[in-house]
Length: 297
Image 1: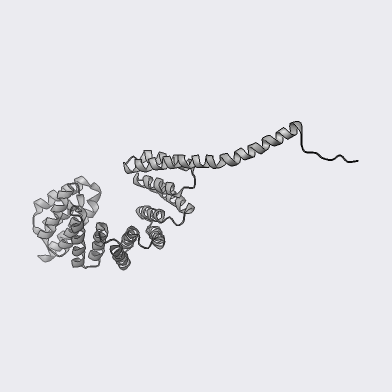
Image 2: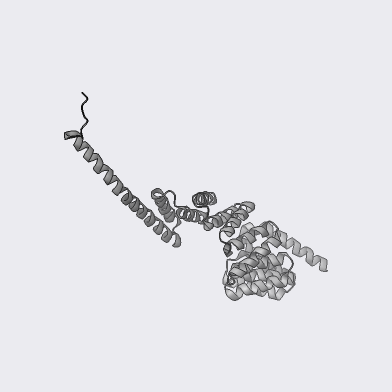
């Protein structure tokens, strides 16, 4: 006759009870541990953001590293670490972080936008344009992405495409000085000097201390042979930013056209003192100016 199996008794019953308690503790503790891990990740992430804002990029990166240890699938943390690396000049590292953020969250428009900036900076204009395009699809009113895609298209020589992007950016953000300045560059490249000057005027109206807009307006005025107007603009740019090398170089060109060779040489010297890398471009511009002067005689 077979023995009937009974419920565990004695030691076996005690083991079963302990196993049951362990399962209950695990079910209760798991969410608590997960919540604690999330809090640790958020603490490091927030401190990283504070350090980033203060310019402590190394400290910010260290905090984002820690946040990602606690939460390896936090797209925003990868995006912010990418931005810190970008500002340190580590373009490859920033692209890797933005790419990881996009893998985790393909709809994070900011990560596409940021990777587009980094790709443009490494010379990958097509990659940059593709990223800006994705960011715009996700957020059609992202004026910064329209502005940057317009710049990249200008760099590629697609002036009509650049103009279309910058026109849209102005509609979405009518007080963005950078957009007006950049549209002025495109208009000047297309030969619309009056339109370019109008855009620079608007940029300066919004931000009277926008040195680059004064310098660019000076370039457009120089193209129109308004030498006094161009020199006045370059001087305003230099007054705002005494270390603006290109403004010295451009004022030197205007002075050369005026016949002020001594003043021109001083400006050229100061330009190269501030930024020696401009020497090839400046020499080319000086040669072109001399040829134009010779043709007038």
